[in-house]
Length: 496
Image (cartoon, rainbow, N blue to C red):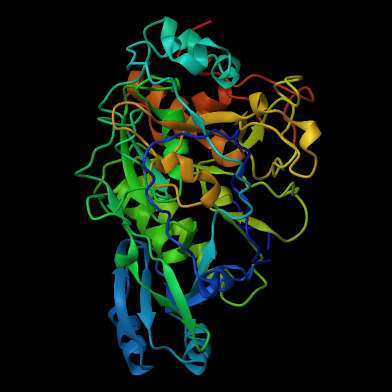
């Protein structure tokens, strides 16, 4: 855990670059996003939700005197997370916050806010998968792996693990805490535990007097969809790197179980409460062994209320680890050195493992740091393939340098609308993407493989195996870009 750094801007967890394609199938219209909604998401400091997080000094309970104090100050407690000493409160005035901050029972208070946790996404369309392809028991037979598109799987030795018969076990449970999962996409179908999947996402539909109007029922977009359907694209892409049916894209641990924990809306927005709620649910009720957090924000603790939000994330993640769940997060894509300055990347820096990105440029040097990745030896544990590109110079990348994954059939971005055209059982689409968002599920897939074949390992044991078997890349020894190195799945499973 790192708490020694102290600004609220936003991480860019996924830069997306896609090759265009068209199809004649019937289109489902993508929803429009109002100017008011976009305006509410644009400030780097986010938009208030009207709720305050109150973090008590007691890290494992909420004292009765604390609840009485909140009531006396005019607050209404909307949720109590007693096991981490956190309460969510509505109706507290500025003077009430001042009083709480001075109280001996309170560690920190801060107003919650809605941020776009996936900003700066650059989209160029999607490619249609082979309509004749069928599910493969062997990921090495997936079409994009066989034709060399998925260079990422060979770099990390996933193919060697598959060759040894290692594909993970259904008893290993991976929660994708993100925009949801398109559980009907042919690459994902049958892999998601639908009964355990949930949505905690809210959607801003307007702003009145500076306060957002939040309407969760606006999602899902179609009546037949479950609330955890991915109406963005991001969560589905991430999930298919961890586990897939190996039709067009091979996945690292195809036989493990996925859980969709939706904390972000179709705009990529969410509150700290929604994100933290997803972590709590995944580790507790959903019984996840691993949590994938391909999302984040860059924050400055000198800003009013931010220390409380950081302490919230730290406590929730620590509690998940106590329950036996390893939390793996993206470092962010702002090219920041997290060793210096005042910025803290959350939840990266509170997580069990924080992941930076590597990738080739023009198919050269596959282990070089991605141009966009955040770095810093005090923040990053390991690196993994995230794809590489220069968003300001098209000549400095090609699609082959990126990571390909499933594209949700409900993708809301207008440039991904082709993903919304499908003939069930026939036409499905795949997106090329680059970002630490794409790097993170590689480490999650490795963790799922380790958990499958070393089931008695603790959170610390899994972490140590990931770090201890990584390939040393870049500067010899530990370095600011990859720290312990780039992951090696085969070595982590005892294979050469």
